Structures are given as structure tokens and as C-alpha cells.
Length: 176
Ligand code: AMP
Image (tube, rainbow, N blue to C red; front, side):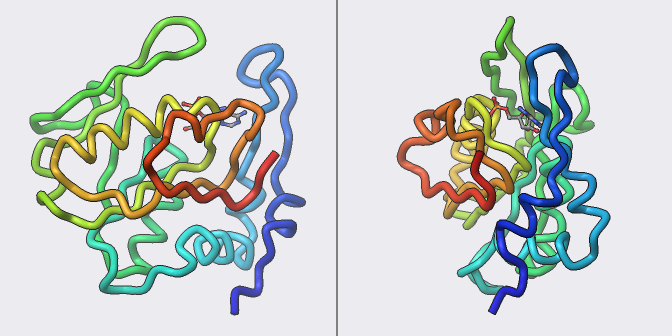
């Protein structure tokens, strides 16, 4: 039984208006991370239903996704693989461009980060328009790995990010 409820996590998420620019309601997860019970509980909720041995790698998205994905990987006795912003990974990479509100951005993964057929959980802190997670899932699939599920701590439902992730199982713990 998971002790932590999504509502407990929701209460701890701090909404910061107009960060990093006017009009954005930034969901600050640092109060969740700072609370030992909530941090542990949100990992339980992100991986609920998966057991050690069922997942080969947890892929986390730069940068807040790393926090949750690394903790989930340890719980599941799986490896951790970072998807980073372009230009940060030292070895050969595959890159995937995606749209931002204005312009584009690129994320990258090492070419040997996942074995073909690897069973992968993809984790990020927040699903907004879905562009970042869709680009990350393309990178995972380029290596021939299999995405079991894409999990987010927070989903901003009004931005319809799930539409960009069609064909994948998507989980979010707290929905706004
Ligand atoms: P998107 O590609 O639009 O789904 O954006 C998702 C990424 O942007 C995630 O990695 C989030 O960390 C970040 N993000 C977008 N909107 C917010 C928000 N309102 N609060 C905190 N992070 C956000």
C-alpha cells in the first residue's frame, strides 16, 4: 500500500506566477523533494505496478526529470539513462528537435545508451504541450528500445500534451 496520496503531493507543489516569464504558472516541485515522505511517495506513485526485473532502464529528461528517474531506477533495480539538452553529452549522440512556443530546441541521447529491445520507463517532472516527451520517446525508439510507459509527476491537462504521445501508455500523478 502506498501511503502517499496524489492530493498530499498536490498540496506541496508551489505555484509561482510569472516565472520564468509573464503568463507562466511555474509548478515548483522543490517543496515535494525536500519532504522525505513526499519524495519517496511520489517515486512509489510514478512506478506503481512495476517490479524489479520488469524494467531494464529508466530514462529521465533534463533536468528535473533526472531527479525522479534516478530514484525510480534505484527502486526498480534498473539502469538510469539521461536525455540531455543538445551539446551536453560527451560521446556520440542522436538528436531530436522539437517545437517551443517560439522557435525550436534539441535534446540528445548517447547512441549506445539503450540496447535494442530494452524495456524502458520514460520519466519527466511535468507534461505541458508534450513536445519534450515526444522528442525523448523518438530517441528511445530510434535505438530500438521499447517504452513501457511515460510517467510524469504533474500534467497540465489543458495543454493536451497527451495528444502528442498517442500510442504510449501515459501516467501522471497530479493533474491540473
Ligand atoms: P512540454 O514540452 O511543453 O511538455 O514542456 C515540458 C517541459 O517543460 C518539462 O520538462 C517541464 O519541466 C517544463 N515545464 C513546462 N511548463 C512548466 C510549468 N508550468 N512549470 C514547470 N515546468 C514546466
